[in-house]
Image 1: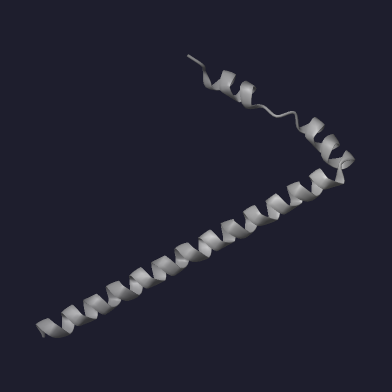
Image 2 (image 1 turned 90 degrees about the vertical axis):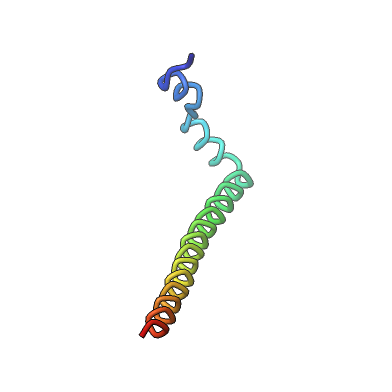
Length: 73
């Protein structure tokens, strides 16, 4: 069975080689920047979507509580 140390060694990426490759190839650099920007936009979109779902849930819960309160009075 592989230990966590062995797994991290297998997944280790030589960052210096990647940096040099990106510096040498402007197309690769553009692709990496584009993917990074898209990932950041999707992350922000996911946060706003989560807040929207929370706001809708809180609004529905609040409306349900007020409806229940005024029906038992």
